[in-house]
Length: 403
Ligand code: HGY
Ligand code: MN
Ligand code: MN
Ligand code: MN
Image (cartoon, rainbow, N blue to C red; front, side, top):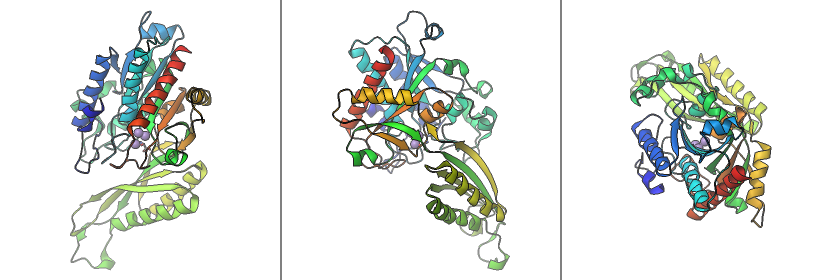
């Protein structure tokens, strides 16, 4: 399975460019549907375009099982990437989920509740700017009209991207019917840090996701000639953006948060023209929600003094995973282990966090990343740790579906 994915969306750096509703995404969705079909999983799509591969040997249909109180146990992740992203962020969770189904079947396990493997679309928000867009729209945390109006760097709207992918934006929206089926969601994910390296452990259970959000800053200016315009006559939009970049690092340091200004659009964008408009995006996060909010307020106030417009594009408060479910996963992991599985918080957002916010019992497993680096071609997970992740997920699914 893994080798099928390696070439999809690969770029010269060795990283990946797999943006939502692009040709690469289409290839990955076809791959996912094929892997599900190979396993006899019934592949459905919800009203957003998230893919679900269902395993239920009956009696009756999945919906009939759910109606009798047997809600599904769901596992999976996403297949899209950030620009120049790593190979594991997302795909590891999907491949491990499919492999866990194989392992359960090989062990002759017949789940007493339906099981599903998911591929959530547009988790990274790399093309249209809102992370976890697929799970946010699914759960009603992102208004479909807002999503459909988003545009990518080429000015293509989300709606047009859906149309190009053969989907009607008119049916795009929350899907409570699909959500009603889900009793628990477990996402396995490569760790995006080095805690497991330092703890010398292959797998951890997640405790919470830091509060995090994205803000769009639009700095005004006046286009003019780079050579003939005196400095005192310039209105250079780039100066406000520069203040944001340096201010973000300074205020984040003061407030014990993290802030990233990693994406920019410059108009007109010529080397010899003074920028008339610069759009920059701030990604703000931190363990202490009050400090994150205060940091963004401070940066926003400063930018507005330069005449900038500031728009919040997404905000996810601190997300605590379901304690009972996480404790249960930890007991399963600890059953045959000498030392207890670590419990880790994370500064990375995940679909599991969005589902948890929607009230669906959700939990996560992290697999060791020896480089500790993510959202980069340097992201890595060793084969034996991936296998440890599969074994952990398989045991958790066995416990949750037969316990
Ligand atoms: O941005 C995030 O934290 C996630 O990887 N989408
Ligand atoms: Mn990511
Ligand atoms: Mn991810
Ligand atoms: Mn993520």
